[in-house]
Length: 204
Image (cartoon, one colour):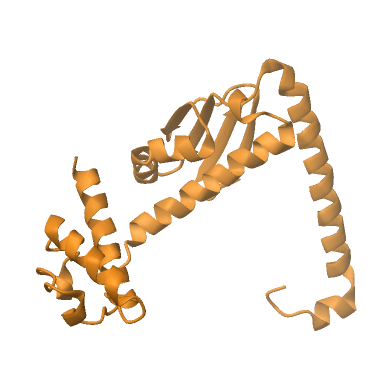
């Protein structure tokens, strides 16, 4: 497959560069590996400045130089979101004492259809990292009656819970409400203090 060929080429390129770097301290073994590698694949480049066949001997191979690759901003953004989704699913499991094997489904409710499509394309990776059997993504998804929800910008991570866990979810939400109410009271007390309001930075 194309993925397998790409993987082999990257591995060959990494071995090629490693042999160039190690040659000054381990000349004989690196030359032997270089010759064996050359018999299988003469061009170990990934394109760009180093494209072309490698020299016949590592002794005359140029010292490797760093290659500049433009980062894929969309891929970085998608993977960062995948990481955050997995963190939120694990958080729900931990707080509700739900074993990983008891999370057969996760629902991702997006505000933007484009974001939903991008994450859906990476569903296999997301299911593997999050130990999820079934993943539902979309902008108009039905939220189950008994579920735990984590809110991200433009996204709700919804994990359906067994019916027996509905009471636990209510208790967890009640505790969260109490925590937020106490936080609001503390902040309001700070703002009511004239000395705090005068000395605190404008953004605070």
